[in-house]
Image (cartoon, rainbow over all chains, first blue to last red; front, side, top):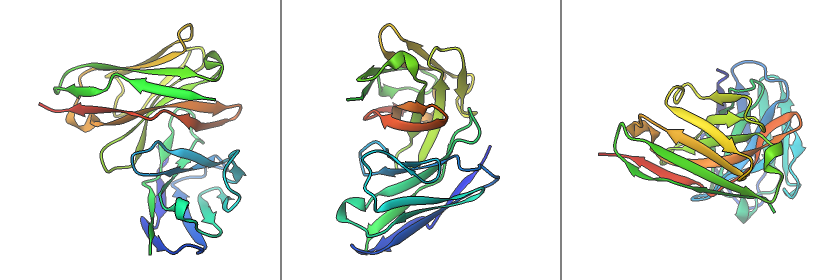
Length: 108
Length: 120
């Protein structure tokens, strides 16, 4: 299976900061990568798919980039509603979907 | 609007069985693949199973293969997960999720989840 590794595991930041989360794949996944946001006690929410396509209704301060094995999720100006855990997910291998271990964005 | 509502979770002894259901509305259920994804307490997300829109193909994570069965009833707009030979490590919140399809196999809508606890 393709392994997904996120860094950092935890990130402390302040409102207004620019935040970047990295996701690395154990082998090339082209651009078949998605990002999700999850708040405590809630279901995950799709933010980005195909590495850089913004899901409808998601604020434009969220952006994704990368291809092959290295990807990033950037929040251009962190808002109070953005403190959450973020997961990357690969879908290059149909029938073998895998997630990263998550990155928790905390208030500094 | 799209709604996915899971039910059927609860406490079960190791070795026992449980069937989860996911009632779908707000979209043409019979046109989309569907997934089950789980999350153990305090842990990350783990994909569990997928079924194509017409039930013709099913895929499972290695951790549940041979014990769990995914199925669907398109006439009832309902997705199922039959879980047998349950183990303590199956304890998790189970989410059903709709596949975006059309080339992007990502999870664009999720239910609220149902908790399964395997304990004696």
